[in-house]
Amino acid sequence: MQSRSIALESEHDIIIARGEVRAIAARLGFRLLDQTRLATVTSELARNVVKYALRGRMTAQPLDPAQGRAGLRLVFEDSGPGIPDVAAAMRDGFSTGRSLGKGLPGSKRLVDVFEIESEVGRGTRVTVVRWL
Image (cartoon, rainbow, N blue to C red):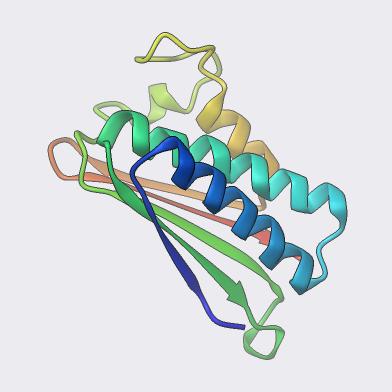
């Protein structure tokens, strides 16, 4: 199965990305609960791209069991303002956007691998993996 890349620039793109991730997860054999987890993570992380960076990209990469483990990797990238304090952003309740501050830490709890790289003025890249 091929990787799929989706531009993130609007609420509509977030909906498209969420549906695409759910469909890929279903084709890979993920249970409905895990499909929902992946769709939720996609919504949260794609919304952050659109809200804070205005535009970016999500790439969904099916992981081949022949090369290790079966699963799905999602990469969210933008060239936005970056996150000044990643550790603070990963704490429940922390928000710079008048939200509940559950997006990043909540997303981390729904996946098996969660990596965030961010540089102020250069952008942010969040990579998540859910194993099958």
